[in-house]
Picture 1 (cartoon, rainbow, N blue to C red):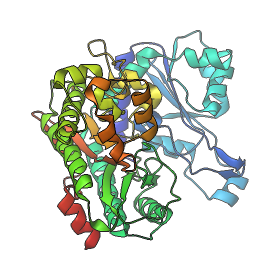
Picture 2 (cartoon, rainbow, N blue to C red; picture 1 turned 30 degrees about the vertical axis):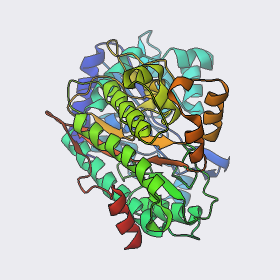
Picture 3 (spheres, rainbow, N blue to C red; picture 1 turned 180 degrees about the horizontal axis):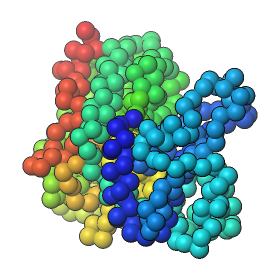
Length: 459
């Protein structure tokens, strides 16, 4: 938790941005795993944390803009709560910690909202909050979801996208844990070791340093599956292990790194060649990222590097610009270059990916590959982004393109099919856009070159 003055300042700015009406921020409740008494580890809503700072369940916050009043609503602990869960400060004491004077029981929420006033609320992503809003607004759940405030949503996105100095310290802290996780993964990347054992070790490290992993760990020899959460494999010599993992620190800020490691620490010539194309894409993207240019243009430059690199290896052919306009590189990198990161690893995706990553001047592309870019608009100082180029050989996608003759004029399919058992390589760093360029969030960079990774594995 930050100093209460930070939360007060954020709420004042939000109030001015919205201008009139009531702002309602619903915190999260606990969610059952398989029965009510066995719940997932509690995770507070990120916008609630950003403005209110309290990470206990079943809270709501209201700003009455015209009357300049704010309320924290929740319930005091019962004796049964204390017996089973321990004591907590009172609701009044918790409110005071973040600069809120007035507290009310949660049951008073309908009374505060029953004033024929405009109610600004965010699109609810959890069923509990969808049902609460449905009852409060006397609407069915679909109507309650659809009635969320675009004005409030855009105001929050504008504020949360620009990271403050205190947030950058939290992100650096999360980055330090993410760094340690990946070093452990590299050292354990040996023949005969199970993927599950490595995933368990690095996830345990994340918990020991903060709250949890910032997303479900991706760790597999089958790196061609972009979000591969199956850890059932046993590492084999000659294969690659893709590890995409990050930590969430004690104040909920995220890290997100990816490295692809040769099992046993020795890359084949074929693996080195693909790795070095991806590495050039990563380093060139970091060099390009600066205020005033769009991330869509950085993504397109990655496609240029991938096309020309694979053309040099004899897998592709033809003119670069024609290939980029046709979407040829998406066969090998069907995802976007990166996304915003902060309190969420995909920052504010609950508020709408397109609202976060695009605007009136920069629209999402509809072409395969390009359309998967989560953040494409103009970069500004204070933006925190991931940079994660990759090259993947997805047998089913290659088969589809060959069968349907998609971009056949640019692709030597017989050469591409020599890589069907390759898997995939992705490299990912986290950056902050500065006044005149960018810098890494966590300045101690993970081993990245083939030589550095081989050394880390064998050390």
